[in-house]
Amino acid sequence: MNWILAAAAPVLIGSALLATGRIHPAILAYHALCAAAIFRQRGRLRPLFPWNRTTALATLATTFVIVAFLLAAPFVRDPAPYRDLFRHTLFPRGDPRTLFTLFAAYTMVVHAPLEEVFWRGVVMDPDRRPSGTAVAGNAFFFYLNHAVPMALVLGPQGAVLAGPKAAAGALWAFVTIRSRSLWPGLVSHWAADAAILGGMWFYFIR
Image (tube, rainbow, N blue to C red; front, side, top):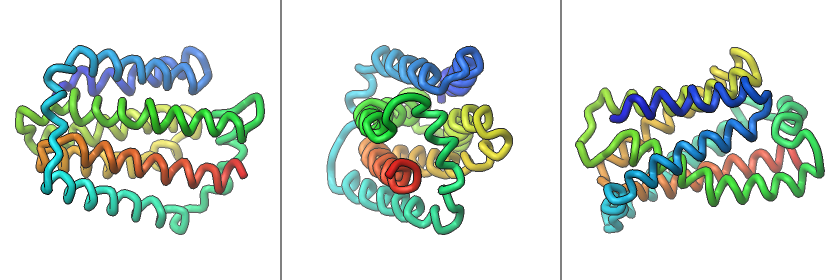
């Protein structure tokens, strides 16, 4: 577990948000950190993409759990009251429909793979058979990475709303270790972001 990188991500995204007052530069700074770390470790990461029956089953199971949780989430807490805040934070100018399309494409093509490979491949380093402490640490800092910007935008409530990120981080860390592959986390992360984007469109954009 690379504790320095784990701590650097939330510090960077929080600092960039405080310095600029805008979420987009913070996101770009975070993605630059992820990309640089992945590039430096690219040789070590290549073997972490095996695909076999075990990997396929782990991918299906993890994706089912994540998507089922996300589909149930709106019944627990109504997202509709956050519509204006969401639009103001992400799309302060321009047509939200057009900008959301670009945002969604960027999320699926850039954000999801960078984030998953960074946290579960580079930060945790599953080749070293991480301990339960490493899984817990990965989940905690993954949560913190989302809680910091959400708290800066929403206040203390943002830290509470980011809570499910800890559970997702723990699940993805655990399945990565058990499968010895980044595919289960990566595919289910894509599915999770697709479900979240669908919810954003339904509640905030259309």
